[in-house]
Structures are given as C-alpha cells and as structure tokens.
Length: 319
Image (cartoon, rainbow, N blue to C red; front, top):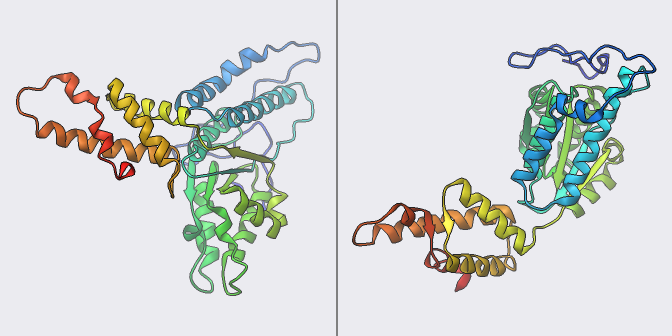
C-alpha cells in the first residue's frame, strides 16, 4: 500500500495485495517494435466489455455518461499496449467528479468504474468505499485527521466515493473542521494516486461552488461526468427492469396507471429519479399484497406476479 509520501509503484504492476485481493499481475512481456496488436483481443483478455455490457444492462439511458466511460476504458487499454511497446505510459489522472440529481445512477457507475479499473490493472481492488461528510469530519479538535485517514486506509487499492462532497467545505463556519479533511484528501489524491481513485459526487451547481472555493481540489479532478435526469419513458423502462428482476409485471391497465403516477411524481418536491421509481414500486407491492390478502377464492401464479391499477392509484400522488 502506498503511503502519501511514499514512492509510487511502477505502472503495470499492482502493489502488494491485502488479504482478499487478487495476486499481483505484470503486463505481458515487452513487444518488439515491429509487432502487431489486435485491440479487440486485448479488450477480451482484460474483460473490459464484461463491465461495459453490465453497465448497459443495469442502467437505462445515460448515453453521454456511458460514452465517457467507454472513452476512459479505451484510453487505459491503449496505454497498456503503449507500455508493452516501450512507449511513454505515465498513469493518467483518474480522479473524477459525478454531478447530477439523486437517483441518476452515480453510485452504480462508480461501482462499474472500480471494476473496470481493477480488470485493467489500475486498481488492486474491485471495491468502492462510499462515504459522506460525517464519515470524514470530526466534531472537535484532533478528531478529523484520524477519521479521514481511517477512511482513506479502507479505500486504498480501490475507489473512494464521496457523496455530497460540497458539504466538506463550510465557508460560513470558521470553526468547521472540513478544511482539514480536504487538505488530507488532497495529499492522498496527489501522492497515492497510483493506489487510490477518488470520485466526488453531488449537485452540479454546488460542486461548481465547491471547486471555486477549493482550486486545489479542482485541479486534481480530470474527469467530470454529468448525469442527466431520466425522461418519463426512461423511468418507465427502469420500472420494468426493477419489476422483472423481482418477477412482477404490469397489466396493460397498470402500465397506464404507472405512467400517470410517474408523470405526476416528476413535478413534485423531492423527486429522486430511479430512487423514486423504486419507492413507488415497493408501495405498489404493498397494495398488491393487501389486495390479494383480501381476495376470496383461489389465486393462481399470475395473480401473485401481476400488478393492477389500484396498486398505483392508491398513492397520495393522485389525491
């Protein structure tokens, strides 16, 4: 494990594994100058498309985000081959910022990014440590540094995902200890960047203000990915995926009721995209269960799988 002030390991060789890590892997032998490489074969060997395909399956829409992730994968794959040819292959800056409203897939993409970087040999661990301000900033003098360093220790070798990162900086409070945590993060982001990727996440406008107040942090972020809100059609598709995973389905009439629900819910406060879809389906399942429990007579398998309009129309959204 690299310490903040330690020497960085050679690119292409993973650092000493912690228990549970995959054994260190060197890149294949150096290639002669006249060698030829099929990048499609290299993608297969590194299982890059396994991660990218899972991203397509798990997340509806988000075309700009998925395009950027593929671009990053292509860059890292090419850098691996460049190193084998003896060309300059300095490790790129992989710290990132994900901006967007809640429920737009930021955490899922962070998880897949960790898997991608791990498969390509840039990280020892396919793991994300997800934290907020409360996990990093202490309540009294001398409390913040140990908390922040403990989180960083857990995240080493993988991805540290800091949600609502702008809360680390509170300019209005002169006695706030968030600044101390930021300074430690900056040190690790620079000196341990071969063994740690930091992803900051939050609302776009607040992250802009955060970076304006913390230019040192802004300069260490190489990739900015903006996660747009889902359209009504995309939210419907997300709901269908969620239900299919739980072996439920919508009747034709229920599909219309679900669409009406989403159209109304999108205009209301605290709408959270896919999270709101998940919550709506959980409540629909509750109403479905109550409806079946009150039904007289025998019920078949399809009854236990099929949601109907009353399972959605009972929501307060329609009142």
